[in-house]
Length: 145
Image (cartoon, rainbow, N blue to C red; front, top):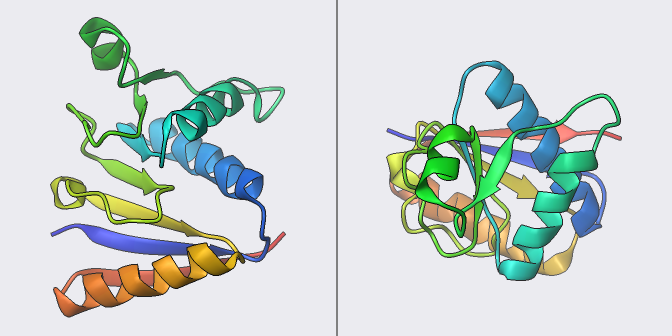
């Protein structure tokens, strides 16, 4: 069964949420995981694509988009998408959407990234209740800084 971790950032900006997603993806890839980053729309997918190239001067996280070729998708350890197609990236799902991805239960782990923004907080509370009512293992992590 999927393990669900809520990472609660103390900041309100979407950019902080995206930056944390990059750090989490980088760590997961270093541990040999394949990662799916679920975004809300094409603009957010593009923002994640750009940030994964540059979020730290000394690192780069190999990634691709669900719109790329199947060969590129197979090679890249991180897949960014907003339409729910995870292909073979089933280790970690990083959810940047305000809804619950339909395919979340295919993953070993799900990371819900929470920022101090009313719409995100409200959606995250609903997500927590949804997962809890269905018996998923939940954990909450407060992220400082």
